[in-house]
Image: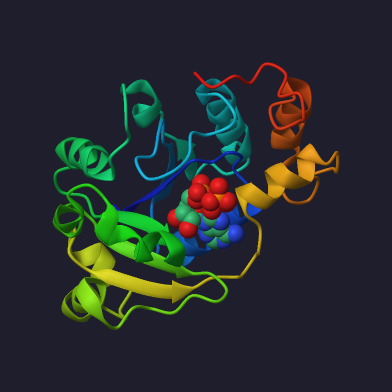
Length: 219
Ligand code: ATP
């Protein structure tokens, strides 16, 4: 069985930047599947704008077209702050012998040392870092050391061991961010072609990013 890819995020909303990256990593690294895990509350960031239910619905509709993609709601079901280390420990307990690959954009990877118990992550999963425009792999500091000690350029290493390697790879660069999408929608523009059709429908129906924020008070 190939590795399980784990793609965490706020997904406020999920967009083609996330989906295309997940697909390229899945195919390029022979992952068996990718699980999208929306977080409830991220420790270092502002509260999401759309409710948990709306973000979950958008993620579910976004992955419908690919059977290798799924949504895992465990972080939304847990109370309080979402820590990746807890999520990975849970997944590791469920899949003792499987390779787990934590999929991150470079911006997320660069913030890793500020994550709760971040040094434990590499013992629980491989870390796969997708390049985004303008970001460089770290060479200095604690992350530079982590990369030097764990990095591999051989994709098969991610299948032959369960955890412990860092793989940094370019992906097609779609310069879409949830922040810019929300701004665009607030101004009344159509997010068509930046998000899957079903996601656009949920955004329109709930008004979750519109000026009035109809039905989207944070829970
Ligand atoms: P925001 O603008 O609110 O920061 P975002 O679009 O970056 O949101 P997140 O849910 O915060 O989305 O990101 C989840 C993960 O997806 C992170 O690892 C991030 O690096 C990655 N990611 C976000 N946008 C892209 C993109 N356009 N291409 C590739 N990866 C992306």
